[in-house]
Length: 222
Length: 415
Ligand SMILES: Nc1ncnc2c1ncn2[C@@H]1O[C@H](COP(=O)(O)OP(=O)(O)OP(=O)(O)O)[C@@H](O)[C@H]1O
Ligand SMILES: [Mg+2]
Image (cartoon, rainbow over all chains, first blue to last red; front, side):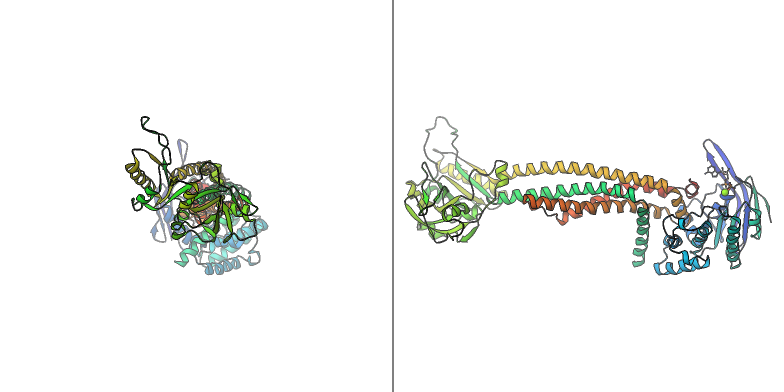
C-alpha cells in the first residue's frame, strides 16, 4: 500500500541545510500495524508527515495505493488527506469551544459529504470510540483520554484507508494510553492500516511491526 | 447545484463559529464598520433629502420658467433715455406663436407707486397684486386648492375675479370661512374670489437668498387688462414664460429677447432670468455638503477596515495550529482562504446592517425634527451593503491569504 523509495528530506535553517531523512526505503502493506521508534530528532514525525501527505520530499518517490504522490501539488495532497488518511496527534488538536460532534464532523465538511450522511457518520464514529454521551461536550469539558478518543473518531469519520498517529499516547497516563492502544488493536483487527510513532516500547508492543530510525535512516525493521 | 449551495453554507458556518469564539474583537470591528456605514447612510439620505427639498421649492417657481424684462442698464449712453417698461399689449399680441421654444407665456402687471387698498368689510390685506393671463398659474406652477383657476373668458371679458394666496385668505377671511364666491375690494372695484392658491414653501431658498423677494403665499392674481385699466396705462412690467423643457429655457429666452429687440430695439434692450441659475447654486451647495460627508464616511470605513485587518491578522496568528489541523484533515488552500475571507465579510456585513439601522434611525429622527423627507432609499441600502462587503473583502484578503498559504506541518508545530 505504501512504497517509499530513497526518500531524502532536509530542512533549511538559515544558511545550513539540516538533513532529516537520508534515504528511507519502506514498504507497508494494507492491514499492517506499524510502530516507528527512535530517539528524539531522528526524523520520526517528519517521516510520518510525509506518509500522511502533509509534508514535501526533496528526493525519492512515494507511491500510495499504487499511485505516485506529487508532494509539491497542494491541491492533490489536500484531496488525498481528505479521502484516504486519518490523523491522530499527541496534543489531540481538537478545535476548542466547538463540541465533540462538531469536531468529528469537520473532515466531512471539507470532503463535501451531505448533511444527513454526516449526522449518521458522526454518531457511528462516536459510538465506535464509546463517547456517544459526550457528543455535546466541548474539549475543555473532556479528559485527555476522552479528547484523544474524539480525535480518533474524527480521524475515522471519512473512512480512511490509513490511520497515522504521532505519539497518540504521549500526553496520556499509562492506563489511558493502554485503552487507546486497545482501540487501535481493535481497529487494526477490523482491517485498518495503522502507522504510529512512539517513544515507549510497551506501546510499540501493540503494533505487529517496529521500524527503528536513527539519524534519518532505518536502523532496523522487524 | 443544491448540494453545492449547502456545502458553501457549511463552510460559511465554520466562519461563524470562529467569530463566536473571538467575540470581543469581532464586536470592535463591527462597531468600526457600523459607524462608517451609518456615515455613508447619513450622507446619502441628507443629500438626497436636501436635493428633494431644494427641487421641491424650485418647482414652486416652475422649473422651466423664464422672466423677460427691460434691461435698464442702457448700453448706448447717447441713446435717448426712455420711460416705461418697454413692454405693452401690442408686444404681447405680436409675441403669440413667435418662438418654438416657448410652451406658454403670460404678461405680469404690477402696482406702480401707491399700493391699492385691499379689503373686505372690516379686514385688510397687504398682499402683492399681479395682473396675469389664464396661463400664468400653470407657468408659475401654482396649484389651486379651492375653487378654480382663471379661464380664457375671465381674461378676455375683463371679469372682476381674483385668485388669492393662503396668507390673503387668513388676513381677509380668517381661518374658518370659505373664501370662494366671496367679495373683496381692490382699490375702488369689487372682485369675486374664484379660487385659492395652494401654500408654497420657500424656506430653504430664502435661506440661501434666492427666494425671489416676494412672499409666494401673500399674492392676489387678477386679469391683467383689468389691472391695466385700474392703473390707467397699457404697459406690462415683465413677461413670465415657460420653456418647453428645462434645457430649452436659454433658447426660449434668446428667442423672445431677439424678437423684442428687432421690434423695439431702437428704444429698448431686454434681458432675462432663468431658473437654471438658481438650480446651479443649490446644486453647488448640496454637492459641497455631500463631499464633506463622503470624506467623513470614507475615513470611518477605512478605520473600520483597518480594524478588521487587524483582528483577522491576530486571529490567523492565534489560530495557526487550528489552520494546520484543518489542513491535515483535508481542507484545501481555497477552503481556508474562503473561511477567513468569509469571517471578514461576515464582520463587515453585520457592521453594515447595524450601520444601516443606526443610519436609518438617525435620518428618521432628523426627518421628524427638520421635516425633511429623509427616508433611506433602497439604493442607499444596496450601496451601503455593497460597500461593507467590499471593505470586508479588501481588509480580509491579505490575512486570509496568509492563512491559506501556511504550511500544514509548520502550522501544527506552532506553539
Ligand atoms: N520546520 C523545521 N525546521 C527546521 N528543522 C526542523 C523542522 N522540523 C523538524 N526539524 C528538525 O528535523 C529533525 C527531525 O525532526 P522530527 O520532528 O521529525 O523528529 P522526531 O523524531 O519526531 O523527534 P521527537 O521524538 O522529538 O518528536 C530535528 O532535528 C528537527 O530539529
Ligand atoms: Mg516527533
